[in-house]
Image (cartoon, rainbow, N blue to C red; front, side, top):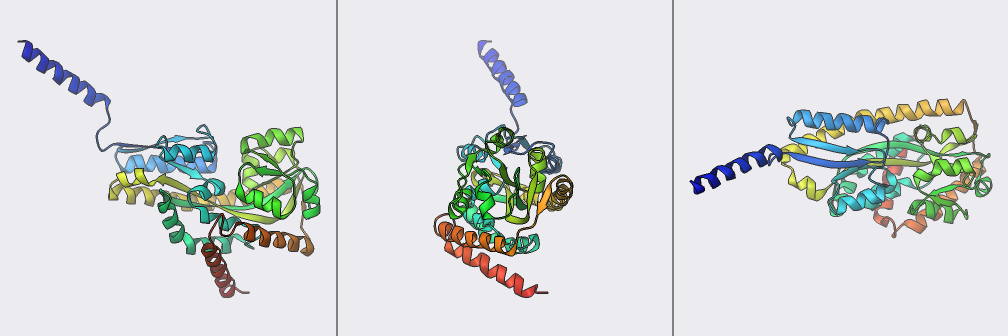
Length: 336
């Protein structure tokens, strides 16, 4: 009787655990994103999560942490490395930590327009994927963030006026450091979360951001001028740790990648439209100044110095050579 009771008890415990624990083939991917849930990034990220859950009959679920609740991109990457998080949507700064050579694309005034930036990036996609894998990450899809512009409280038209404009530098960002060092500019390093307050207090008077980002972060209400030239072109990406990726079956990997790439193709179109619409809105409310050829030449001189400073240290000489080669090819084939 005692033996039977223990057998029954063990069976009851087994049934209870079976009801509360996920099935062996169920997966929860914990992913963090710094932008708000209602942003265009957030909308397409949620759409991808919903589609993945539907197509896998609820077997693969994405638990998404929006709005930077898991910390900044460096915090998120550290949490991915120790397994607390599995993936993230990273902007250029965070992406450079898992794929260092991608930083070569963010050199100032490297690209004349978004078409050539995207074309060259597509040529380099396999190369960047290989590097990310060597660093322990898988890239699921790329986003084209668009050009970053200079927005300020005071009129900035050249390097001289930029030096006197109390510019913001993203804290711990190697490209920012190299840019301001090459331009002999003293900038104020802050995290993204501190920018709005710093603009309000006057601690900083100049910021760098895509047009849509200015509105999303609510910085546009605190500036009066825009320098009408794209200073940097930025890419972002969704990444997942290779450890977690390799635990998924080949079928699930293919499905997840396909869904992200399909949705992010639509996201890229949405980002482009959002940036264009944001520029129109902003330019109706603030003064826009086109830099002179002399001012542009100054920016190009700074770009050469930044390239010299960062090549071989922040990204490889091989990568820079490949980027320039593809860029020259594009310009040869698209001369008008």
